[in-house]
Amino acid sequence: MSSATPTAGTSPARRLSLAGVLRLRRPSEIWFKPALSSVAAVAPPNLLLLALGRLDLAMYTMAGSLCALYAHNRPYAARARTLAWVVLGMLGGVAVALVTASLTRNAVVLVTVGALLAAVQKALCDATRVGPPGNVVLTFISSAALFVPQTLGQVPGHLALAAAAGAWAWLVGMAPAPVRPHGPERRATAQALNAAAAYAVACRGTGERGTGERRSGERGPGEGDAHAGARAAGYAAVQAAWQTLLALPATGARAATRHALERLVVRAEVALAAPADTDPERLRAWAHALRGGGRIPRTGDAPGDTDELLGVDAELVARPAPLWRRLGPLTPIAARTALGCALAGYASLALGIGRPYWALVTAAALYQANVTLTWSRAVQRVVGNLAGVLLFAAIAPLAHLGQALLVLCCLALNFGAEALITRNYWLGSVCVTPMALLVTEFAGYQAPGDLMTERAVDTLVGALVGFLAAVVVTNRRAGNRVEQAVTAADRARERTARLLAGPAPVPGALEAARRGLAAALTDLRATADGAAGEWWGRALPQERVVLAEQAGHRTLAEAVRRQATRPDRGASTRTEDVRP
Image (cartoon, rainbow, N blue to C red; front, side, top):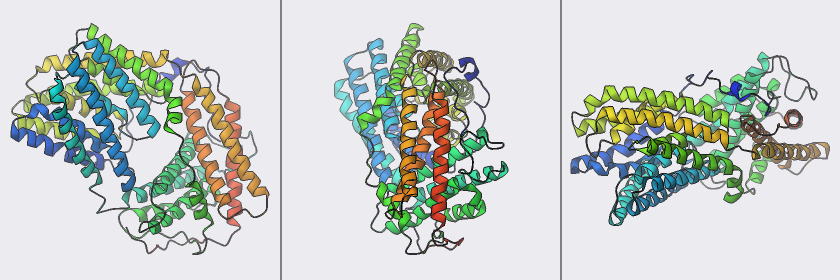
């Protein structure tokens, strides 16, 4: 079972721990993709403006160029749509900001508009699960645009620059498609296999016989946070792989590749439900074979065995909840963002800082799924920004030797930020901060001492005020969402159990039910973890969560045992004759 979910009675002081907040992780497997994409998207427009002597317009082109940071984990068809929406969303935010800036120079009004934009951007990015870097880049762009003097006549030209750079960013994001058209889905499948292998190894390390062989209420020997984390990571990776594969067409030239990868993800699901019967090395061998452009490994399924893929196709009839319904649970987060960003900007104005949008963006960058995670991000933001200010002091003399060096320094920092941020947010911020300071000098020289002082003060103000807003605006819906997730998991378990208890189910029905149960349990764990980090809420139904997870995982294991009674699937590591 998963580790115990902390109740709302846990002392907030215990959640303000600094342990592990600054610890470095292994870099993302594709850390170089957003890093290279950002440079490829930013460099040509900036160098062109440099050649034309209009580097002061770089802020508008960078608005579009930074859209290249998004959607690197999505298949290319889905990536094309996502990037297009990101560019349109960026243009919408910039348009509101530029029109507002052209109509008023009242700083309080500008901060208020910036805070409302930040709240809308946060809610939409979370509801659509656009992925990293989320709302932060969009908020940085629109907030900075608010404080650039404009006239209404200039707005169309500036938006045109942003749109042209956004179109170039779209092309950069889609550029790898001809070389590795199936790269994202192969990578997602490999991650699911590796995560399942890690869970199987963790289960063997604690002497477990399998998920379903323990009575309700019992705790496995040695099962703790690490073990529960391995299982949660495994199911999350599998769900991510399914979302990636289901974004692909089920027919046509790419269908054969999709179906071959689906069989591998099914094997990862089976391993998570019955880890004792899993060979981790075989899963890792399959994952390794997916790297590069070689053939997709076979799972040993009989050619006519289509029950599992029928279960996959059954999922295609399900449609995501309407956007308005997904936005509803995010209301407290949006309220935190609006209040925190506004108060941070007002506080910066009260202190006489000339760029209150820095404090506003700092506050916007803090808000995570709950208050505890927001605290961790606040610490990371402060440490990274203050270290970045010191780095700026070292870089500024070189950058001031000429505008060409200024642009090159910004490109190097852009690459460093994206290359390092997957290790820990604070490490990426060390590069983001001096880059943002250098960008302010595209329009003209700025005194380094003033820039450093203002950035340091705005960072501290934004982090402090933003975090206080997160504490004040409570998320009382968190407990209700846990109740709903428990109910959904129970219903999914009952549906699977009925199929197991009855005669032979319709082909694909059991597989669809099992996959629905796995998704419900994954959502339950994520919802419970998110609610556990909230403060001041009512006590969570901890016992119901634990019992629902235990019963659900036992049912999953029983479904796998039923599956095992079918003809032997073999242990083949042969490869499908399917190439990208």
